[in-house]
Length: 354
Picture 1: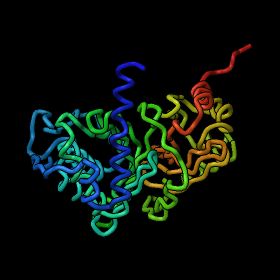
Picture 2: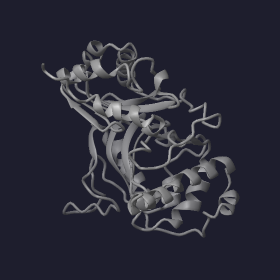
Picture 3: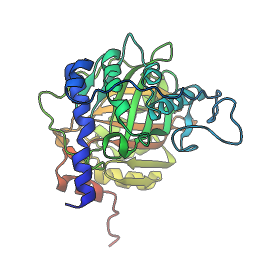
């Protein structure tokens, strides 16, 4: 084992231990007993953004003052309001400012679930206890920042990065978020690939959550319709029907299988080869949709052949005609055998001409 791999293996369990302890205990006292509780630490106030911009109000010269890389966020398929909110959220998270982070969540109805680890925090207080215990312990270099936001103030999908100092490994997640009528987060589910992060596989068993509160949906009808039609085609193994819902220059990405396919013609050939073997292919079904008129995403139950994998998440961007212009999938490839994982990676290869 290389020094780098050993370091990641030793430290990547931090998030797993933290979330499982918090979910089981639901109280700061138990977190303290686990050795992760420290005294409260104060941080600078969060940045306030001018509506519809990527810069804080009152700043000039392109200086954002953000504690994460500026100008990295793709907001082409979200509203200015949700872009502003989530930039503020991640700025507060990167500053490890627990009160500010928790101000974005609904005190009356907050659910946070890590679908990879199978942990569920079912109240604002549980999430607050967890962050209060952990955030003061992480180094100042621990950043969390969005790279893409798709949706509106009903609900959205956010692709984001937790840098290695946060949990011992780089985590790249694609998460659905639901908001209430006051713009507060009520449901957040993290989907990330443990194999890509070089973290140990989660054992999927009886302790894995059975209730992800999928009924708490607040999405634009356009994205719900697109998600259901697309997944119906995938579940039926119908590549032609699936690409018929896509734009001519669609981009298809599988973050877990490290695959990127461009254009409807390539996509149809890919899906003709792949739908019978992809976790979101034949036999998978929509569980929950999120997003606005320009896109969002949907969570799905995995195809039977992908067991023990239970769930995954697909982000979709929509063009002006309502067709899918970009599709990005993520799931925990650690739940697949290594040969099965390798076969998914190889599905992007074109067949020989002769």
